[in-house]
Image (tube, rainbow, N blue to C red):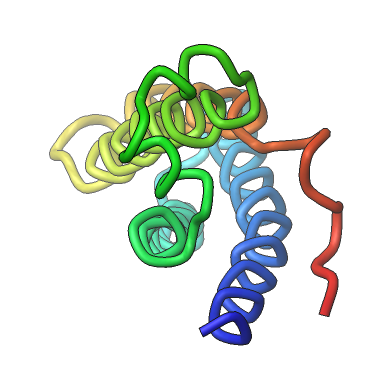
Length: 153
């Protein structure tokens, strides 16, 4: 059980960097398309699609950690007053989950804009805004100070 937790946490940690790279790429594509007035193309669509796919994979791993493997959530579920008094437990049990969930919803909304029957310029503008907001929320919700930058296998 401990090995599974460490593997999932390690993958979750590595996937954070994949998400930031793919998300950054998608954002750059959208802003360039918007600024240059280029047409919406397959690479634009795929950038958003891959961004949402890796976010969904990260969500699945995060939910496994949250509900099956996290000692912090086990503590929080048995004694909620600790959540309010401990900033680390509060971050992981409330803020991290809430911000990441909202970020994923906004990313999916952005991805859906690329499928709408609207002008290419409008697709670029809407997806650029949605992916930028997603990226900001991700940066706010990543535990930069309490987790190592790379997994400890």
